[in-house]
Length: 228
Image 1 (cartoon, rainbow, N blue to C red):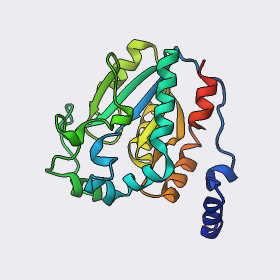
Image 2: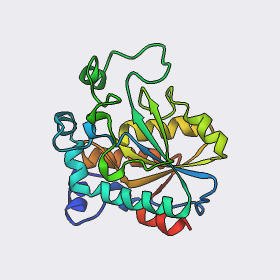
Image 3: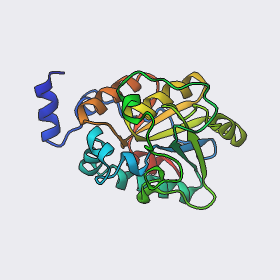
Image 4: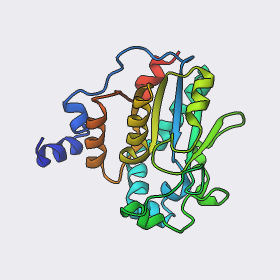
């Protein structure tokens, strides 16, 4: 699709690549007993407008523009009401048992040696709009995938979880990495497309198009209707 077509689609309220190719669809209904909602990296340091890193990366602006947190909160509340398991995944670069950490690439140059999303600091806490409630599972991972040194697979397998609904920040980092990693581990993946953001809408749409090859792409509203 030409850039001018994408721009026109956004300006008229469409969703670019996603809408034109009709990628949004659930291949079959959601079974609340074998599905978990993953809320990933929705932490203050990378979501809030008063966080320099969140603004530098473009995440804070996209969250505000898209209304992503409102949609995600609605999905979380519905999952809680219907008994579908909600798991919060936080990034903590000091978490887990990763034997070594990468030191090349823009992301690692920004966060290396700092306190970004550090556990026990305000920046490492969940955004208040989607914070965990008592009894909900929290896991900490040290790299992009939610499975990286987090013990997530053990949690899922103990609960008999086979399907994962992915949400979080950002679409092209934790969400996409977890989709590929989870798929390779045998989990069926559902992307809640409007409960994720990237640095730009264009990057988000490109990422969703890639992911649609190996997962179902849905929305908060469609998932709420499907989860009963």
